[in-house]
Length: 248
Ligand SMILES: Nc1nc2c(ncn2[C@@H]2O[C@H](COP(=O)(O)OP(=O)(O)OP(=O)(O)O)[C@@H](O)[C@H]2O)c(=O)[nH]1
Image 1: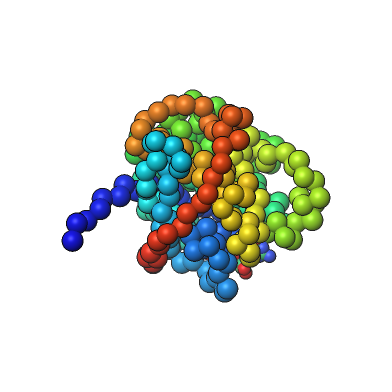
Image 2: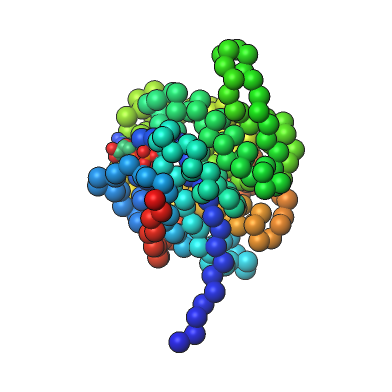
């Protein structure tokens, strides 16, 4: 039987414990919500089949690996083994927990520092005097000037976040603005949030395209999240196949 080679990209999904990373990935890859997610110990990987530039002459199928890194602070010192290589990063925060949004800076710094050790990105240790704290944070200026890893920011628990639902034109979160990242708000307890044709699904598809482009086509074009023409393009998401692996 002939074997088919399908190229893959690896996307790291990070954020505080309990923000909904596992729930997000499950809904995204399986087209239905997970019933009882358990704490992720170490890392769990789901795979989604993605049609790059679907509907164009450049259409091609890729595997998108989503690496769900457990958010428990107890594993802070060991989880960096899951961070390289990172072709894309999904930063997840809980819309009902503002602190989880602020903590995304630390998460990004953690991944970028690891990447930096592999000499692919710039990241620095900074002191935040306003909070009188010595914390690891990425430097947005260095980050934007370096060879960027595409980033998507995801706010979960939209069903519980009254303020966000009623303010339709909510501004991007500061971290999404700083990184030039796209942002989506989702309710992971329903498949509707990421159903083909929904705005979240269109943005996710664009994000996957960008990750693939950077990885395999080495094109430096403007972020699709700031290119209004691409916002008009159609999308029909496709989840055909998936596998789950567990690393502890
Ligand atoms: N109402 C609501 N609950 C959600 C949503 N997303 C996740 N949850 C719930 O939040 C809890 C934590 O979700 P997980 O997906 O396990 O969170 P996680 O980020 O993977 O957590 P760790 O494995 O500890 O890193 C679970 O009880 C989920 O059912 C959402 O969009 N809406």
